[in-house]
Image (cartoon, rainbow, N blue to C red):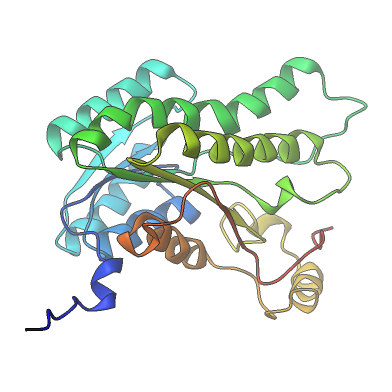
Length: 261
């Protein structure tokens, strides 16, 4: 008798999974948290602003999933310990992780000192490293896990005034590739490089002229939305991507050169 295979769409589901999302209060982090809940996961929400997290938690609970609000400064290692401990105690062993917290603006290399440069590197790389380390045991307990690090196309573009941010995200990409080797086969680790994504953080810089220029220079003819990144994250975290690790996925509308100026 031939065994009937489960529907392929089942491999995109995340029922029974517990996720941590950093930077979850707004933008890409919020979209990832909601998408994970829609796919069936319970989600621990981490960011510095509790009010933003509570609003996202309410949306997740309305979907019938559990949400845990853990105000967290990811630059504080003790806060990361608390985040992981509370998540495991209140939701169950962590099996999914989205390292979204990070970012930086342009920098002038003639003026930025070493301390500020180091802060950009640390902010974008170290918390991701530590959270992978701190959730690894729980992921093994859960039978395996998956991680997505949110990087940036700045990691591969050569452009003025992005030496700090570009270096930080390039380091995040290479760390992703290396840690994927360290933690395989029990934990898969991948990264996403978003292009220009329409978020609240971008809004002050998005003049009508700049929007028009960005849209015309993007092969897909539009700016990215947080949900574009969230959809890619759900795929990489799901069993559908079960043979993918150590990879960096560009989600950028087809842009292959800097187009934000």
